[in-house]
Image (cartoon, rainbow, N blue to C red; front, side, top):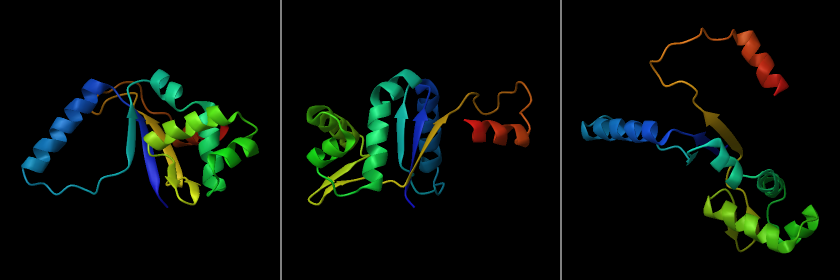
Length: 139
């Protein structure tokens, strides 16, 4: 299965993490293979780009690969121009691929992640595992 992680990051924290990573590489440390990632600087930016309609379109393409944009618009009951624009945006983000045989979704799984507390910072105790599972199942 092919995965991509979509992150909401603090640009300053990301810059620091990249500098630390580069220093480790320069020091000769062997690094794990690169993971597919897409980063946004805020939830507002993420939701402006990955709208509900675009995410629904992406999910539909993943389940019905090989459709043309016109076929996709008809099957979704949406205006062709709006579907075209959404496909262009998702293709620019490399979440959809346009091939000779139609549209394809290169990823099987998308994980959206937001860090609430930087590593090393302490605060309130973590919720129990049971509570975390319950929140996950309800959400």
